[in-house]
Length: 201
Ligand SMILES: N[C@@H](CCC(=O)N[C@@H](CS)C(=O)NCC(=O)O)C(=O)O
Image (cartoon, rainbow, N blue to C red; front, top):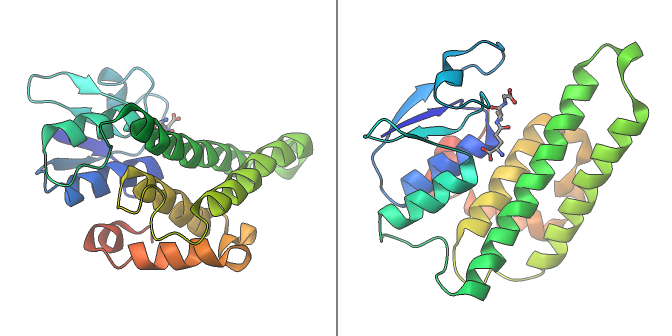
């Protein structure tokens, strides 16, 4: 297997953490997604990373599909519970964290455009999604040790990738200063080698 990825992609980081936590060997191939015409398009028509190339030549995307596949490839440390209610609760955490990232990426792209071309309404709209999403994650985590059911799951990985990227790309949003429980959880997770080794820097 080969993972097409960039080291700063939070979605790619989610997959890299899953690989490491589950001790799955996988070669990484680094891609710059900036050019519109990229060899990546041959594997993924959306031109996005992460994309996972399987040994039979087929390609899997996006990160949610890839992590679901990887979780089933190895029984080591199941990250997505099997029971329907449990499973969707964890996948909802992932959807929320990824959704915050999606809005954060749009926010960043807009603010990188020349000032005169930026839309304040669009910026506010995306910032609102990020802020509401982070507030919801803080509420849902509460004072518990893990996002879901007192054990480490994909929910904790997704939350951490989201918060790590926000701290890196949008320090002005200061989730750490606003939500002590998120900061505590993030710092605890950061001690796991898979998290420490993939932190954006
Ligand atoms: N929903 C996708 C999002 C992937 C994504 O947006 N990746 C970014 C890099 S962080 C990308 O490839 N952007 C290139 C583009 O949109 O053209 C996933 O979870 O994999």
